[in-house]
Length: 289
Image (cartoon, rainbow, N blue to C red; front, side):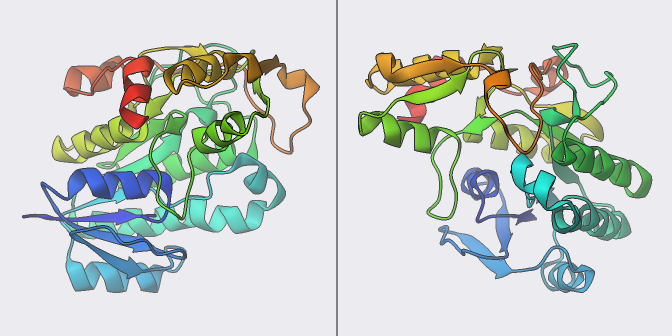
């Protein structure tokens, strides 16, 4: 089998990609902290911020493709620690770009729907980026780094994702489910809209990008535009949890370090033409349950 390098395997998405890829690829996963065991996956401790570390891994395994998921993906952390988050969100992308370009292998990079300001959704690949947070700005910078240094790479803009997680990570639904099971109220934005997908669907999209040698921008959003509040109600229904504990709030009523756009729902018709699955949120949540 061909060899696939997945960065960030202690995170939710990287871990999920490894689970999905191991049947078709010889998978190598990099992590920096919090190693997890994944059957049939060779795990390597790597600091992707250091070019020499990454080069050593490339020299050792000689990958046939790379999926780069390692990132500081918490917008509030990026907002308060911009220099440190820049090292992994931007500088490390340059390292990956240079190493993949040297051997001309497929590469999929995970960007975000937060490159948009939320005023003109739904967004397609040709729409102008206009981030309002440091995290979004760093992802825009990383996208440009890839265009400049390895234009053959796939830049995959990811929506908010949910699903089963390793011990070292969480998706946004786990804390919500835990609170509802304890009889606690959860408060979710009724005026923030996304196009969420499960981690397994997102992983299929990333694998599709490298298997079909996609280059340039590719949106991997789900088929349904939904508010966080509406999602919470659906999740509670699917998991047989009390919907009455799901309460709506507005963005203006909550002070957060990082600004949040109102609507960054994605148009993903290009990915769907390539074979990206379109599964309803209800079906995806049933599979996670």
